[in-house]
Image (spheres, rainbow over the protein chains, first blue to last red):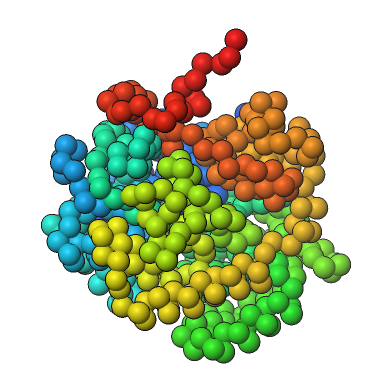
Length: 82
Length: 437
């Protein structure tokens, strides 16, 4: 599978091209997908689109579930800084 | 795909049941649209990447259920249904109405997540969730994993962890030893399943297996570091781990069925012998009608697909096999019901609603779910109470089956245009009713 380059908070990162965005973020050791109101980190719980814990901003669109998004060349994801 | 043409059948869900339903209807020359939220067909059990091994039946069904025989809308979800023949669908950002003569709901199951201290830490996931993460490319090589679930699902997940190079520190089953042994004995009459079970245990033989054991707490700063296991008076044990895969079994996913007004029986969509729900024009198949495995889902899907296009006769063996798979589902539910002690883990500071950050201490068990929503906003966040609703049913006995459109989070303008263009409902949805003054 060819690699693709995605932008994580603007930083280019290379990942294999046939994986979900949730998997890509774990691969890059980005384990905080969002933060709760106290600032505590949250990450995928269900991995199948039910729980919305993995919601991130993709290409400027907020609230997308990283577990349902496939990575693609140039995808820009915004996540809290770990 | 055009929205203006009326379809013969819309199937919601691309797992075993939905694929079988779509294939059965398409075989009779019907216009079928299959909708699934995921980017690929297969549902959870047949989730795959290119080149992954799949059972033959899965490959055959996925080959059959594709254009031009079956239209596909992947990465799409039904967000509303003003009437059963008009489904409002979010096609990955574009919202449009689909008209159809019949609907088959094949929305599958989800995991039952129960709160305990530390369950919001990154690295604490569901049991099936860990398998899904592995299948979608999450690396596990060298990672320390604790699986603490219930029922047969823990075994293929354990095998997947080993195959992915993870270190299985423990496999824990919350059901007691006698229940597990009794279930194993029952498998003697199902050689296929028994063979699978033996294969899974052989693949994972290095990992310790405990029955009557469940996680009490998870600890870590920023991500999971330690799991504290306990159960049945046994001493607590601390296990350092990167992943804790834990859930209290599977429950039917019924939100779309409930939105359509389908009758619920127990926690599943009620269906008759032809897989018809209580709502004319709506059939249901697979785990949304009761969790009983992929074989039953395929059988029910075939029957539902035929019935939904007006064919009410199907081969008798299908009915016999369905009787058997449903009995198996009933046995599963009984054997692996979550034990009462799982409630005792919850402390005042334990997060119950992960979307709205509502902790157990803010909730009064004497309330009803509706009161709790008004006081605390529990269940009013992004997941629409799919996670905390079943948790509250278990913890407090609340009926948390509230559902209102739109499901999921469609682009609101598109949703509004779609429902404005629809004939009025029997009553407006709650969310559109102004508060009484």
